[in-house]
Length: 199
Image 1: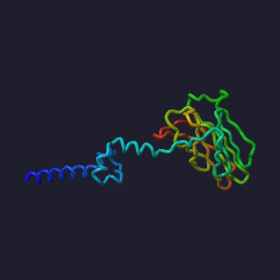
Image 2 (image 1 turned 180 degrees about the vertical axis):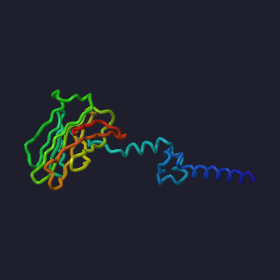
Image 3 (image 1 turned 90 degrees about the vertical axis):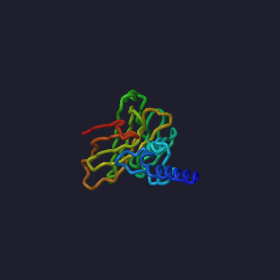
């Protein structure tokens, strides 16, 4: 009889564990629980495990070595040194440079610079330096007169306080008045890291 009581008690505990995967994962109201939370041993995982897995999927800047060249699909090439941003484009193969150490920018104040090159064939390469924000830069959105573009980020290792954003696009016909309206770099929490409003 004692053996039967122990079995019933154990079964009740198992049912209670399986029936509460949402609480065990710490999922907020209105959010779906992870599909894997269907077994008892998974459902009792500590709350911090789910929070950690969600935090680690946020995109961040690509970390590059000094002078490591990165080629974007449109043919532009970017590389970083401790002194700043270097780049070339198909139409302008001579290396260009934007310094982060000449005093033109304050690395302690959030900001974004922009450089736009448009070819005669209507291909645009947009890039710049972002700097001074709090947190970890994660993504960049560029709103233009031709639509919204989502760019990529590059940084040197060691939290230098600045990085490079870039994106390219083929413009629609009759885009002679192409321009950038604003650039927003966001952190891994979705908050504004730095921005530039032009018009």
